[in-house]
Length: 90
Image (cartoon, rainbow, N blue to C red; front, side, top):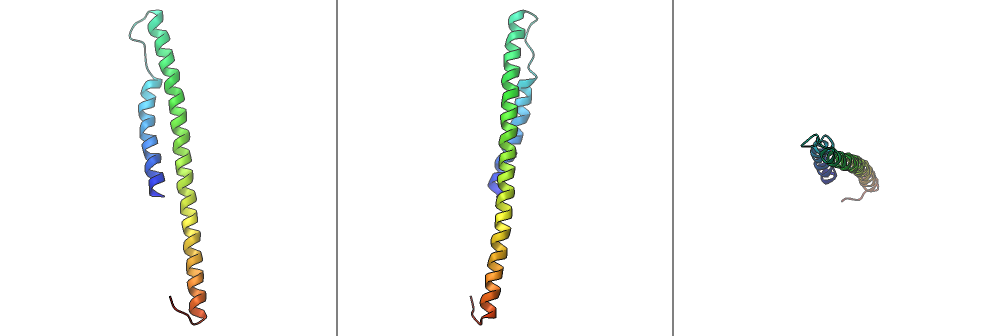
């Protein structure tokens, strides 16, 4: 679970760098500079969207692992209780 959250945090940090690409301005006023900047901006937008999706996926997986861990712990507790009620020990 922690690994999924750590990975999500890395994707979140990378999004900050992608924003820089998405806001790129051309170095000059000529057509080539503007066109180049537009391509970089599109790449930055696509990267930002992808990183955001990856972050959401990782957070979703962390939540699923947390839920599964809770269910596993409850099942283990239930089984322990049943064994003790039957006079057994662990």
